[in-house]
Length: 587
Image 1 (cartoon, helix red, strand yellow):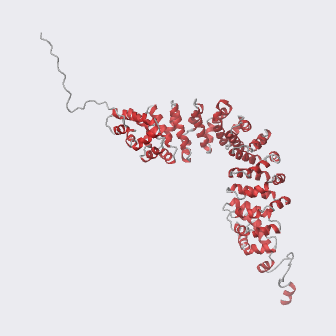
Image 2: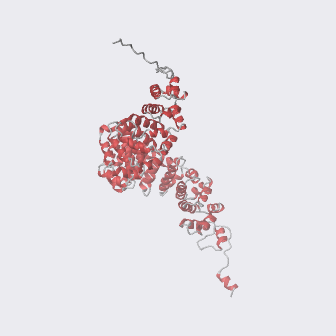
């Protein structure tokens, strides 16, 4: 048997490239590798770029300059799972950069990222795809893209993911999306409330917080409040408020409760579970301004219900609200003022605020915040309406000057409310004289020229209440107030026409004023109003007659007669023919 001869190995084919391990320390080289047809190279290049992008914003900007995003967008839909995963991870990180966000919108990458939320994709892809969308959804244009390309439904589905990062990214993106009303409506259709409520049980505070913030937005809509109630959401909110360990969530939980109280059925449920007492406790005892603000806001909304007002009054909510008026936080001051406004429907509360509350509200009229001034003026308007004692207290608390200054506010609500308080005060002659001494007629010029019908109406009413003597009327005329007042007679708004007619009737109390008002066209406008069944009112008719009765030469010219009560103080007027003359001429 011969000796075996070792068989020589066959040389490799000449047309096959030998395997090559590429190592590069330059990111530009790795970016070029993103165009490779080989899956292994693509996966490794993506992994290297991911690690590079993680190191900071400068690296993300560098990748943008090198044009890495465009080839990466193609890899989002690559058939190889690892390549697809690594590309998605890169976009999750890169999308936090504002310049990258802009480019991704231009490259229309949203649809590809949404596709990565599909159930068949692995959890890590879900995590970074949802992170990418969460980062992009901060901007309005991206919100629109995500919504219009159907991103909401898969994001809601991922709220039930076993991975906390996926849950966190998904609820964060949903929170950004629901700032738009179309998204909120679609959210209701997709029955998103139950999975969002489930997130309140999460062991991760950030997930709970984002869920509450999302509920705080969507419960501004009635349908969402009903869905929350039907899914036992109120119970969960109350439990959060009762748990001291969850105090970091109390601000947002109170905000949701404040929204829910607008729904009567939900409010009853909150009342039955002791929630109203809990709100009062937060308002009284918390040292955190945002908690106080949201608690006071919830009290204000609840107080529009008579039964709740009665309960709050029994719990002495008034003391708490007066205390909150002294808060350093403007939001708390506003909420407390609004709560006082609502509690004014209770006569006992209205009486309480006579000595405590009115002085503090007057101080708030001097605030630098226009919103604070508006809320304080509303509370004072409600407190002084049909309550002479409170009107007197407001005047004695140095309120007249502050109210007249408020007539020049930038907010229509503040102006209208201040005018209402002044009108309420002017019902008492001593207070009216005090108002007149503060140059109120000049202060009313701007409100009379306002484009807001509520301001116009309230300003005209204030003129009617304060122009009760010749001196005040002369001041109004000299200030140029008659022109805008007459113009308001032309208003298409019924209340404005009525109050303007009332003011004209009051101003036409003497001949010089009647003559001036007629010169400005008031008589013709009133005559036109009074022939219209739909536009005339008792004050327009009274104003017309008052003008004629204080301008007798015009009355005789218009009607051909004067009544027995029309006394001519000077000059000569032709009374016309008597019945005797008529009979003699026509036997």
